[in-house]
Image (cartoon, rainbow, N blue to C red; front, top):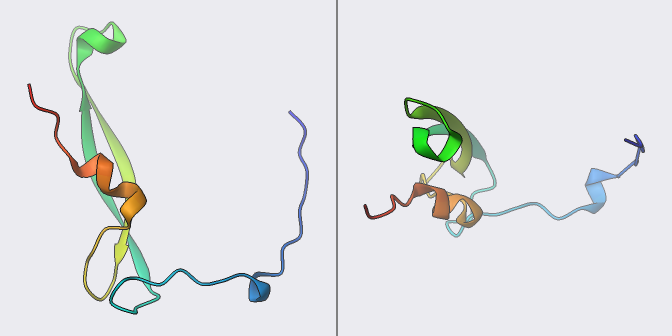
Length: 73
């Protein structure tokens, strides 16, 4: 794999802002359960998944929302 180093001036990039106007976010972890039958294992496997949410209003960033849904069995 080619390792390319790109210098980016972050002062020239926009800052993500929550619907509430806050610009500070924090990491949270949700745990997804992968059924053993999908991965060829005898047991289910728990997988931690990092998501980001607003520090002020606790809203999860939209790109992580699909991970919060539980499929119907």
